[in-house]
Image (cartoon, rainbow, N blue to C red; front, top):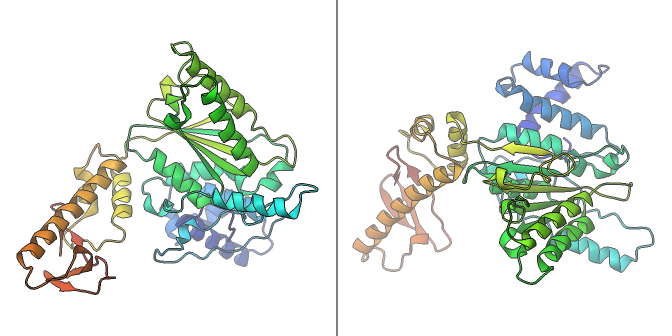
Length: 399
């Protein structure tokens, strides 16, 4: 399976179907429409997936298989562990191309700089739910980062900026950070409040330095959270500093063009709750040419989010996530996360009271050394963690 892809269970299933088709039709040309028809005529669960999601995965796999770089299958473990298989590298960041005449010591230093800039791996696509179609669209737009050398030879324009907008708590920031972690690419984050400075010219310099860092580490990703704070509409802004920051942001994005094979692409991801307050010059082709509106999740999306949030929790037999999804109309991802966290907190409070009331039975036992099972409480060694705790249909975590 191609490693240069944003890994997901769908990619793995699609790749297996492509192999199956190749085995049955060794001389046939691989085309997305033919492969999609083959999947629809099979017994694969992919038949129930949205057409756009399956076709995007097919496009990506076929694209990567035709690249000159060797491809290898990424092992997908059935359970999570510290290696986070869902976040295995999708690009060969371990190999840092050296510039002509570059000294070995400088090359080693640059390689270390790239490794130090890799996105925080604590964020994972595995933890997100209800975003299949959004991820399919992002995978398509990230092709230049996936195969930068092959792409640079085509001289084709690429998407430099993607603006994600929607109500607070719908997962914009989490998705961007999880995407960066899954890509295993250098990640440069611009937090809007930290950019602003009272010194004249310093705010623009901060923006310029962040973009220069991303270009030096390319292929890489820049993430601007709450971009509306540093890119308001200039005609309505009362601050000269804000106008200069917008101008600097425009110039910096224009400077990301790939003009030769030595240039590597930089993708700018930005998130905002107020897209209409952003300067319109940023929201055009060549800058933030693609926008993704992340709406309040519908019922199936809420069910997927709840499944992701409780994936590693043993649930009560009487808890139906589909029913819970119906009961939470209007909830966004952050609300659902708070719902699950609140259930855990309430259950842990019950445990604390139990330990207080039965201190004689467990004189040296802390919360972190308890395991629950069938209304029984057992002491375990100090390295033990919570296990076998379930969430009941009334929202409480029970044993």
